[in-house]
Image (cartoon, rainbow, N blue to C red; front, top):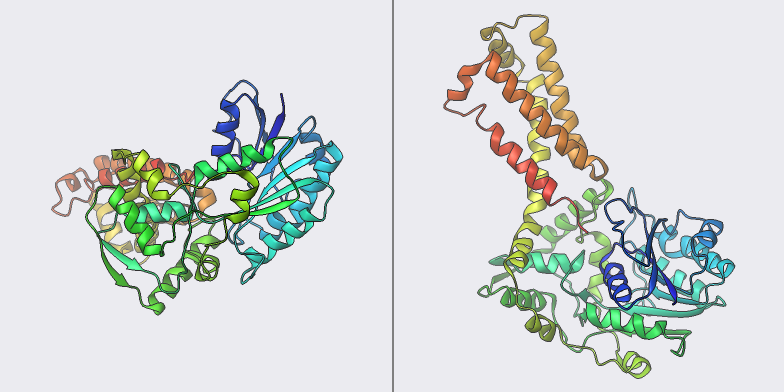
Length: 431
């Protein structure tokens, strides 16, 4: 039985390819940056922690021992604390290719992006195309796949944004978006399976475009109908407001988050993603399905509606908690310091302990807020926020128990804050 390595096995496409191949009896090596929480014991499947751009050719050669084919689904939209476009798309890909050659891997199926052979307006498309050139110049039996927006039951990135926007009764229409020919995830998986056959043609680049043309807002409307919702009221978002949205996306990206609305997405989506499916159908014999056909075959569930609503609420929850904790910390050590001292003295706590407790509480609040803002520490900060909130409730019950009956619900408000942090924890993972 052939042994296939899936690079980027926790992503939207990689997960689906791996699941399909495993069900067909293939032996798999699933490769991802982080394997914790994904390493489910499964016959014929092993997990390996590695990352394109940070793993050397020597390490790849060891990892890919006895592998007959590699499917590379690794990619990034924009540089950030955990993402290096050049490393992921160009230099790191070169190391992976060299590792494949050293390990004796022959077939290499690589996911690129639609339209990069025609225009490269961003570092994303520039590095993607450079990687394609390196691969096509290698001695491997390569296949380059350039999909349009990939849509399926699982969602991530742009596909998750489409699902989330479809829940809004009022839809802001971004300016400067090009037309799309979205492709069904099932057809992408079938394409990979086709090219894994030994007799399949190699050394070919294929665009994967679905049969339907959409404007972005029309695609969102299709999903809204699938969710069983009435048509949304659309309004054109002014360019200045859209620029603010993309700028906020870039800012959160620098904190380690991966929002789909960033300046790279703005430049890339302006040209659209329509492509040409002629070569795809000719080489594989696959007749791409309509997205509407895929949706009709799987009616929306209540869980689909939950996700669509929660997707856009998640950044609201996290950002409101960040503002709450940072604001609380600044107020404690700033304009609210005197009021805090007064409460402490009413409860029998005097200087210097009163000063210490207030300053320590303010510092803890600031640390929790900053920790929540940075993606790498958000999970730990949410847990810390719950612990600190519980400590405040306990301390308040001992020192100032009358605040349970305060008209402003000073202590009672701790419960909904904890609940909101639990929601943040539940929705934190994107994939």
